Image 1 (cartoon, rainbow, N blue to C red):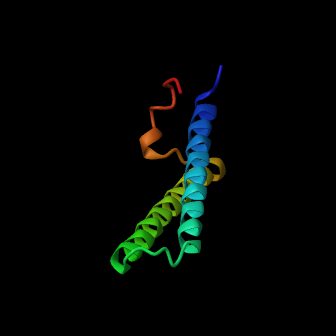
Image 2: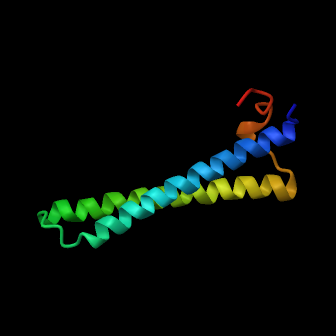
Length: 92
């Protein structure tokens, strides 16, 4: 039977791994679009395409940083994120 500590750590590790995977996917999409320049799309469409993929990469990076901080704070300092307090007992 898992302890509350183990369940919280599992939730945070799963969140971190999901964020890492999302960042990798966004990074690959960014590289693919940048390597496709010039794409032959009209100027505004091409610029918007780059902006969209850049925004997605930034969001994925920010989520990965947040997941890293939450996991490290828990592992190193025992800080349970507010959204997980009292929730760790639920089945994952």
